[in-house]
Image 1 (tube, rainbow, N blue to C red):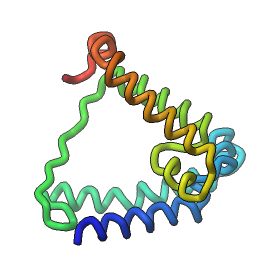
Image 2 (cartoon, one colour; image 1 turned 135 degrees about the horizontal axis):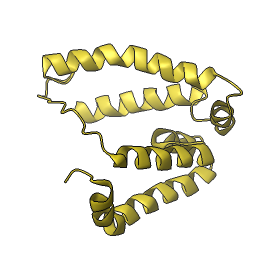
Image 3 (spheres, rainbow, N blue to C red; image 1 turned 60 degrees about the vertical axis):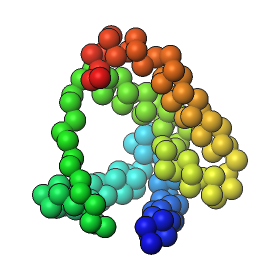
Length: 142
């Protein structure tokens, strides 16, 4: 049951990203250049609709399908700023963050494969080479 539910939810999420323009390079560029507020509105709507659900799940202590969950507060550290800047730069340059990469691949946009390769390569380099020195430098949690 669960894999089918996840497939259905993922498909609906991807379809919503595609239809809303959140996976469209031109819309993303217009958002970052402050030429169009459509995506800012979509992001704000997502936060407004999701926040009560997350609050309820945390209070309930169970996920929608009944699994026990505990949401730990995240520690603030300089790595949040550095990571956010890198994430934002990649999002602005490619016009895609992780979800829309797969939406664009599903839409047949081959350039999204380059964004996926870049994201996977960056994660691999961080995990294999940069994690230890950056942990000390930025005082990242263990």
